[in-house]
Amino acid sequence: DAMVIQNPRYQVTQFGKPVTLSCSQTLNHNVMYWYQQKSSQAPKLLFHYYDKDFNNEADTPDNFQSRRPNTSFCFLDIRSPGLGDAAMYLCATSRDIWRGGRETQYFGPGTRLLVL
Amino acid sequence: AQSVAQPEDQVNVAEGNPLTVKCTYSVSGNPYLFWYVQYPNRGLQFLLKYITGDNLVKGSYGFEAEFNKSQTSFHLKKPSALVSDSALYFCAVRDPRVDTGFQKLVFGTGTRLLVSP
Image (cartoon, rainbow over all chains, first blue to last red; front, side, top):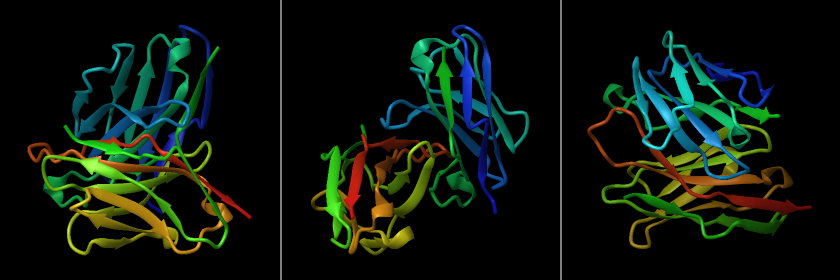
């Protein structure tokens, strides 16, 4: 089945130690998103890739970076995690509306990050 | 600016009874509206959406939602609740800007549904 996959499901890191979360998709969608979700709050969009074009939300801290080496994969890099970065990180994909996208974002299962 | 309100933090319903989870929206253009469900330690699962057409939208797992333009609402409903429906439900609206190819979703704060046996 086509899907969005996130690894690992749980990640423990130390304060200030860089960490990378990964997302892959078999949907062949050209748009990929990273969200941060804390304590059952609404997901907060960090950034998205439209094809290879990176688009940062205005309030996303510089501590968060992303890479998309190809259509299928996208990585979230947290350069110096702080205690406040402990959260669930959700990856999502969609097909853009100009290519007949049906307006639905599909989410992966998420990676829960714990910062010690 | 677009926004979504979910006025209830939690909804309690007995199994077998109908359920309603409320959502109201505010957008400047035609709304694209979505419902997602999230089970503990899981990602968001798409339930249903309204883009255009019939005001009553049917989705996964027996859920449906009614788009009401005059009341700017998009309430989620199910005729007979199951204990397994207990989860966190998010309503979302798409940013109606049309000059971007991606869709920016604005989420509500979520409503926790608890279905008791």
